[in-house]
Image (cartoon, rainbow, N blue to C red; front, side):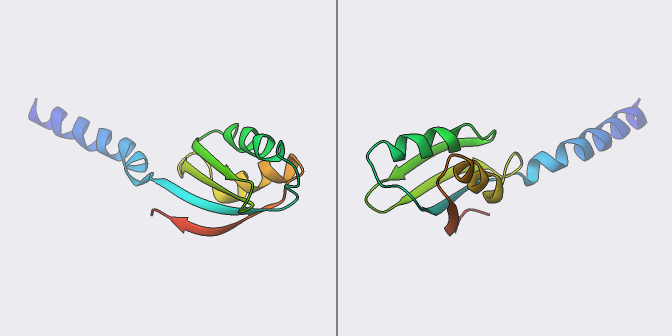
Length: 98
């Protein structure tokens, strides 16, 4: 019985290991083409639709978007692509987290 429990624990820990390496990250993007007060709303909704994104804060004045996301589900390139597809090219300028 102990052998089965040990084997089960080993298999379960191996399966769960990738999730242990996932981390929440925060990246600030410089966002181009924001020229009106509705632009931040469009940028925010486009980025928020990316699976894995948990929060988005867009600053019209600074022309930035600060995004917190699960790095096991998405990455800065996918987030920048979502903004670009909405007509607002974005590039990472500052990263926090692992």
